[in-house]
Length: 234
Image (cartoon, rainbow, N blue to C red):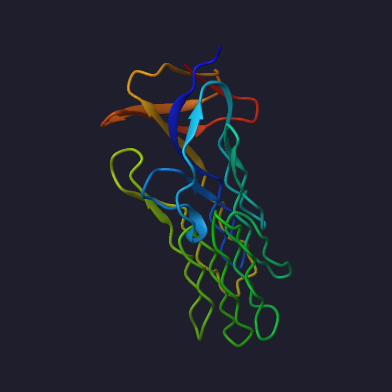
């Protein structure tokens, strides 16, 4: 019989790559008591975790085009990759947080939607000269619209103290204006979880992780894990 342990998690997917519009942040799901998930949601419900579980860290969307980020997974929890920013041509994509709109359609293209409980929508582009683009949505706020001569900033992220120190993650990318070149790649996701002190934890060989202690919890920060990788708890 598998023993299950109380577990708290922060599961962040890979961010979308930018084009003229900013890339959206990866989906942000958290069940740490008193904290928040993305998109303005409260912390998710407590869980018990034990046995061998799937763990995946989503990569950021590749540069050179508008691409969504990869999903991140911890057990039954999946955060969706961020949406790619709108290009010229090309519309922004929905995701954990949505990509920002490009400038190519008067009065400007709307940003794409985020996902409830994970992140916000991207900002809109502006169809008037000098054609500023919208910022990508963040876990903590909608991406800003392009306005006047200014591209929209990316939406802010959300702070968590799951490792004992407050760190803000999953902000959206800023809009890139009317340049024809595409923007940079999205940021990689991360999976962080913690279990009571002394709980046995082991990973499959493909996982890159680090660990630490905060109060009565042992925490594990996983920065690389493919779709066939696992963590065994207990």
